[in-house]
Image (cartoon, rainbow, N blue to C red):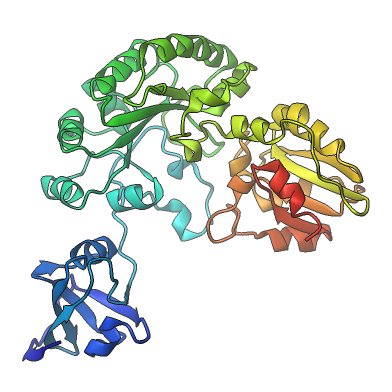
Length: 439
């Protein structure tokens, strides 16, 4: 390792702060310290964690970092896959500049935590966590970085490929070059997964058909297109009027999807177009079989969750509880029939187990919101049957974020305190959930 310094009176605002150093790591041994600022690796500016991981893969690293206005130059030799041991600050998320007519963020009630009102449009989060982005503001430099660093797959909200429909949905006045950007990414072999938020009378019918055709041209790299119904809350004041997806429209789409499954397959031979579970629930139609979903490309988007749930309760249970136990299953109105038909009978065949459904109306967002993932703690507490006694209550797993909060900032332990019983986060694998009951 070599070391040299030079004076730099002002820290560049683009450099990234080092939050911590791994003990006895290469960075630690080289003299880099917590709260220094990483400037570059082998001449490449490090803007975020992705840059750090990408550029540190070389075996000889020329590292420049800043400490109190002084630039330090060091060289580190390492193996190809060895991390030098820096923990960097989180990158600042890029916000969305669109003004979509159906944006759920703009339909949130007032006085929620600040993060609820932030809509990200960051391709890094699309790669890392599967967040959907629109590509509308993506510049050529960002597109080139995606290709250079192989940030694949990405998740793209398309909604429509027709220029005029896109302008009306996104409410912008220019051509955002969507298909040109998609063509560039797929040509460079970046895998994409896409979605359409269906707004009745706007991007359904022939518009949806054209969107499918346009995207299917790139089926070698676009692996899936999910169609999800628009979500509408009671807080749409001063926003354009939008009709919800009706049971009849949902049934029509389920019928059409059978033709789509026959005509359109991706490069792996799986269906190209997927309807989210909500359409089958709204239409009261059976879900496709397990093999329809392939590797479940868009499970986090509500595509195939119910099928996985159904599969998890097939066959006889070999589980038996040591002592009698009564559990409650919290669910939204839309999923209640699935829980009642498939999950409840399975659970109630288990010796010593008594399971009941507790279906919750969404007063927080309004009765038009019926999915379990948008349930709040206050609605659960307020509507929970007063005189029912449960040994344990299970929440839907998708109503809890990665920090353990429901949308109204309550945690399972807050609900437990109010209801005076044990509250746990459920699991889509019902057998696994029951196995953990007595732990």
